[in-house]
Image (cartoon, rainbow, N blue to C red; front, side, top):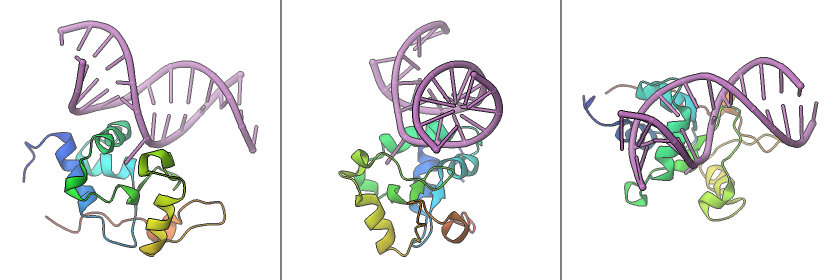
Length: 109
DNA sequence: GGTTTGACCCGTT
DNA sequence: CAACGGGCCAAAC
């Protein structure tokens, strides 16, 4: 496939493949993109992710299932509502139940 | 081509 | 338990 595509493009494509009711971690996306240690770069990709791509960045969470700074999504609780609306389970801690909602990864390509 | 940064991750203090 | 620091990687300046 488009292995020539820059790291960003891969991350964007992966994020775009995240189905509803599932979430992916930065480290997971980084690993799928070919750089298991590039979780930070994934976050950076999100930072520059254009809305035109319809990227469900709200489905991308950190390794423990906590959400990113709400400011990024336009307000506190916004990201959580989006996720809950898609069927994501939240724990009492305010974290996502990764055990039940973690994305299986790209089925095939 | 070196420096800075970032929506991270992990261990230690 | 909270705070701090270092490490990691890729893109932007």
